[in-house]
Amino acid sequence: MGLSACMSNPATGERRFNLMSMDQEIQMGREADGQISETMGLYPDEALQTYVSDIGLAMGAASEWPDLPWTFRVIDDETVNAFALPGGHIYVTRGILAHFNSEAQLAGVLGHEIGHVTARHATTRMSKMQMTQLGVGLAMMLEPELQKIAPLAGAGMQLLFLSYSRADENESDELGVRYMARMGYNPEALVEVMETLRRVSEAGGGGRLPEWQTTHPHPENRQESIRGHIRDLGPREFRPDGREEYLRRIDGIVYGADPREGYSRDGVFYHPVLRFSLHFPDDWTVINQKQAVISVSPQRDASVQLSISSESSIEAAARNLYDNDRVSGAGLARTRINGLPAGIGSFIAQTVQGPIEGSVAFIDYDTRIYQLIGYSGTSTWPAHRETVNASLRSFAALTDRRAIDVEPMRMDVIRVERSQSLRDIYTAYYRGLTPPVPIEQIALINQLEPESHVQTGTLVKMIR
Ligand SMILES: [Zn+2]
Picture: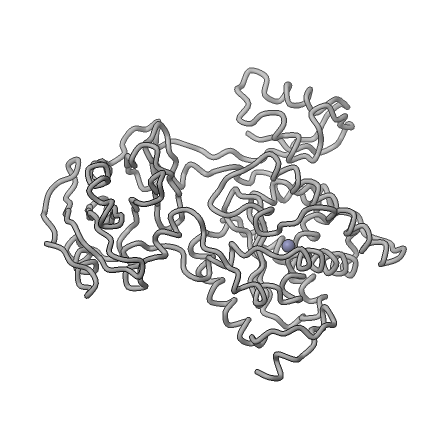
């Protein structure tokens, strides 16, 4: 440990105090990587995964830590962000890919993230990790044994909410510029990406993950300082930016939230693939994770959570809950919920934050056991009980074809046939249709303004 704490880092050339050895970092990263892939889900497009991975692996190999177990993956989330885990696991969201306009821009963000890994920023910031703000925070109060009744993000997920310092960001930009240049990419593309990310955060967004600006703060003077790092490189020759190649690669990718993973309409949550609906309490915030749907009261003092039990019967699922020293309750009463075989019960559980009280329902539907849990602190439970119980009893099979037959928006890369403004292209493309996104959003993903002039033969992104 003494050795690892004093070794200088080949990327930064500095001796920086770090109690964790690189082996420990690799181990921690590997565990978190598994949790994140499982919880967030990878984007199911093998060709796109390989494309991103090949570029990343080449850059990782050109870094000062070529032997790390580098992985580069695309997460199936509409949020605009990229992450680096200790030990070399790097993720980009499909949301950020929709905003790049060249291979060089993709390489810029991968290089920046590789910089966070090689400079070992994560392990020096881990003490400052903050829990996620909604839902997850409440459930994190639960003891590990209780987490199986509220199957939520593990410790690895918290790494996604890590926020870097100004010095870290600057250092990663410098390293990103270095790695881009080594691969022959013009680092000016990193400046272009920073401008787009600034515009994206101004426009605001959504998704299951934090936005770029949350995890990579301190945007001020970023572009100027990156240009400084580029000047330090001296004059160089670069390869083409790979604009056409890149746009061809992202043609057809899912854009925005994917309704096939569940969506809310008029206060009702629909899952068109699993074919159920559930009415969460009115005005509660609904967070749709891959493994659970979580709703939280406006005061954040109560939660209703839906997940699928790993057990194959209502009885086994109930035993899983009640066979716990810290959980007490009268057990399950058999009933039917909207015609489906079910068991409902109440419980009191001891957690590190004090006792919680709640209701639970297990529903046997379409070969799965659905588990619904609603709870709050014991003092506030009487105020929430009726609302929560009504929500639990609203679970129903979904048969309405209009609610089942939903399709996500997709990227459509088109070639402009004659020189005109982006606004004119937009108007012609959506003639006779209701545009799914406003012109401002089309301008943003194309890194243009609505009135920008587009030359004949240029590829442009539309959303269908
Ligand atoms: Zn960063």
